[in-house]
Length: 260
Length: 287
Image 1 (cartoon, rainbow over the protein chains, first blue to last red):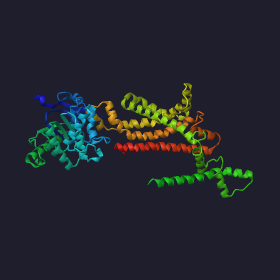
Image 2 (image 1 turned 135 degrees about the vertical axis):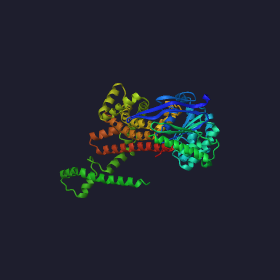
Image 3 (image 1 turned 90 degrees about the horizontal axis):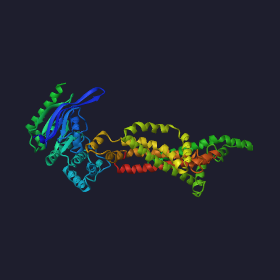
Image 4 (image 1 turned 90 degrees about the vertical axis):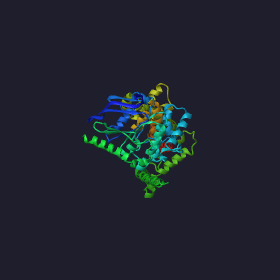
C-alpha cells in the first residue's frame, strides 16, 4: 500500500522564532494521505492547518521531521509542478482576461500554444465558466472568480490539489454551490485534495478523511474516516450519519481546546 | 466640464491679484518719472502708467501676453527671437534627459529589487545625489563633458537626467515590490523563474507607480534642462532667454519665458496623465 501514499508526514514540527519567543506552529505531526483522498484540515486559528498545507507546498520549511509528496521532498515536488495551490483570495490579475489568467501557469510551465487553448477551454467547462474566457476578473462575481482560480490550479497536470480556505470569503449559498461542484470535480478528475477550512459542515460534506487539529502547539487531535458514500447530494447533510460525523468533529475540536 | 468653473475662477483671481501687485510694485518708478518731468499724476494716469512701463518691476498680464504673442506667432520659428525656437531647444534637452532618466531609474530599481547588495548599497547614494544642489553640480558636468569633447544637447540632457531619474527609482522600487505575499507565493508554487515573475507580475503591478513617478520626473526634467542652460552661457533655450532677460532688466521677456516654460511643463505632464489613463483603464487598474 505504501506506493499509494501521495502525502506522507512523519513527526513533522515547525517552530517560528518570533520576538515573543518560539511559536510551535506544528508539533510532531504524522499523517498519510492516499491517492484519491479528499482530506479536510479543520481547527481553530493558530492550529497550524494552513502552515501544514504550506509545508506540503514548500512555502514553509519544517524544523524537524520529514514529509514526502509523491515520494519526494516538497521542494522537488514543487519543481516538478506536482500540485496546484488555491489560495483564500482568487488572486486573478486584473490586466488579464479569465482565459489569460488560466493560461498564466501554462505559459510559465512552457505548454505550447495549441495545448494552452485546449486546456483553458477544458477547465473552464469543468468549473462551468465556459463563455467567460474573454471577460475580465472585475466583470465576475466573487464566487465566479474563485472558480476561475480553481480552474487555473487544474489547468496543468498536477494530481494534487492544495486548497487553503478557498471559499472562506464567500457567502453561505455560493459556498454550498461551490462545494457541490468541487465534489463533482474531484469525482471526475480523481485528484488528491488537501483542503483547509473553518467550517464543520463543509469539512464533513466534502471529505473522505477529516483531520481535526488543535492549537499551541499545532497538532493533530483526531483523524476521522468518513463513512459517507462517494456520491453526495446536498441533502445528505440532514442524514443521521452526517450529523454523527459532524458531532465527532465537534468533540475533537472541544477536546483540543480543553487541553489549554 | 465640472472642473472648468473652479479652474477659471482661480485663474481670474490670479489675474486680479497680478494687476493689483503690478500697480503696487511699479508705482515708485511711475512717481519718479513724473517728478522728473514735473507733472502731477491722477490716479487713473498712475494706474495706466504702472501697467505699461518698458521695464516694470512686475509686468502686467497683458504686457506678457503681448510679448508671448509677438515672439511666437509673429516671429518666424527659425528666428533667434522666437520663443518657439527657444522652447524647442529646451524641449529636446528635456525629452532626451527624461528618456535617459527613466531608463536609468528603471534599471536601478530592477537592480535594487532583485539584488540584495544593490538594495543595501545603491539607495543611500541615490538619495545623496539629490541632496547636492543642482546649480552647484551643473557647471561641473558641462565643464567635464566639454573637456572630453561633448557639448551641445547631451550635457543639458544629462543634468536633466540627474534630476529626473530619482522619482523613477523611488516609485519603481515601490511598484516592483507592490505584489503581495500571496501573489509571490503563487508564482513560487508554479516554480516560476525570477524573469517570469518580473515580466508577468512585478512589472505590470508597478504601472500605477511608474506613471506617477513619470509625471514628477517630467517636471524635474524640464527644470534640469533650464538649469543646464543657465551657467553655460548658452545662447538658445528658455534658460538662456531667462538669463539674457535678467542681464538687461527685460522683465517682460523673463516673465514670458517663465510662462512658456510652465505651459510646456504642464502640457508634458498632461500628456503622461492621458497615457496613464488609457493604459491603466486597459489594464483594469484605474483608480
